[in-house]
Image 1 (spheres, rainbow, N blue to C red):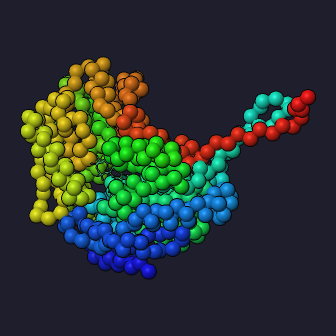
Image 2: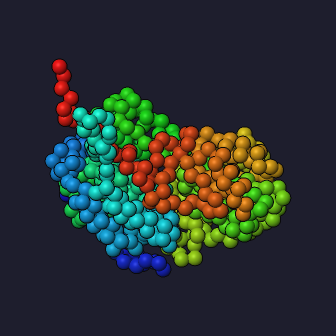
Image 3: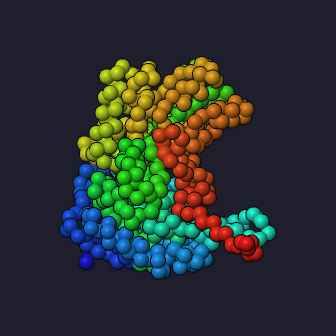
Length: 501
Ligand code: NDP
């Protein structure tokens, strides 16, 4: 029987004890992994061990696939009607709501985001996402299609079957909600692999899924390393669909594994190098604040982070002065301090990666306006950093840094800016700041990205689709669009009176 970890919090923003199961959740039970191996879970605020979770193995994946298939064939899928699936998801949303502070505390401990941001964005958004998909569960509708008087033709949207979902560490609970919401609403059986950097909220919510009464095997959770558990999931012949959020590099591996195995359906939500475009007629104060939110929210660890900020030459100096002041005012420190805006980066690996990008920016001749250094004696803290004097060929302009680091670039006219903004392999998101609606919207329409924000940034809603153009991904998450990822379309043709002679 796997152990449970109890963490005692005594912080300015949260006090109390939280228990988290450390095993694998397969077929409605908490189990030990077959390998007996464990994975360290590290606190990014100080680099120290929090606890150890069970590491899954290929054998555990086989067990989870078998359990998921059994549920799909007996108690889940088409055997549990939409109204009952809706009630289960509603119950899960209610349980998450009752435990919202605990979930925020676990997210702050494990990921390093601040308790306040986690509580008001990640956790609230995740609850709303589950509740939103509860609303869809009994509204998965097909069509009847007119062909001839002699026939009845109708189309069913059936759950696709057993699905694997691999999620990253930047929004651990939110990514879980985005994935399991539409999958469970449509009746698919799920095998979830959280990132081993941030497994705690997913483990906690698995308990809530159990408590809500989902049938055994309809939801399974396997922690483990990407190159082992992730790869086996991507190659598995018993899995009909895989959904992945993470790097473009791993996204390619998943597609390759699918093509070499059973051609499972693949949706990918990958990286970005999103532009924020500030025109000379923007509300400058608001543009500064939103552009800062665009890059520094979640410590820059957002796939849609506005990491390339383009500012019209007429307002460039004013923008830079205010943006630099704003950046310097952001307090970096303990995620449980209510005054703190930015906690540590998630891991030693990401910390090293971001600092190596900063080093490369300096070496390639860019100018640091503020930041550019690590902070403190322990933990993975990095100063919010602004680069100017950059060239389009520089690594910091082209590659996703995934940290609190932006480049600010001057532009002259509206035609140039569209070409500059689109000069990237990515196409996830963009922000446009202008008080002229024609200028803002005509620019928004020319940007090759799945989301364009006008006079705002980084705002996501469960009902609004999200996903990428170009190498930012395949498919859309959220909204009604996500349901299509988890349903197969079946046309049934009934002959009423068309007789062969
Ligand atoms: P990865 O893409 O490597 O990891 C994301 C998830 O995929 C993790 O659960 C990981 O497990 C898993 N994974 C890794 N290899 C495989 C594989 N062969 N098959 C299946 N799953 C696999 O991201 P990193 O954490 O390494 O971050 C690197 C960069 O990726 C970031 O700097 C950022 O640029 C980008 N990224 C983008 C995200 C987004 O939201 N679009 C989210 C996270 C990262 P494991 O951790 O064990 O390797």
